[in-house]
Length: 99
Image 1: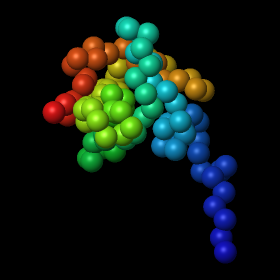
Image 2: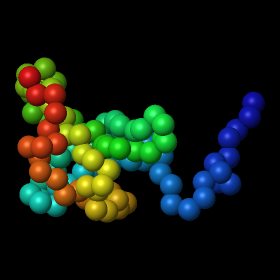
Image 3: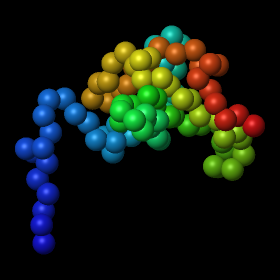
């Protein structure tokens, strides 16, 4: 059985999706915790990340509430730290999928 060794594959500052999903997103404009990254939007042609997707946590027991999510453009990210991702967004403009 082969074991993959990633230590020689990554060059520079890289992060895997599983690491990104563990970080909480903070809006610097409102000092509000938005939640954790659930998904990414990326350009199929060039493979670049276009946005982070963070679900809005308004549901009660996972069933009552909205299905809204914040779609945060990648250029709104100000800092990715060890525990947090700092963004500057207008929450009303980034909130999508509300029914």
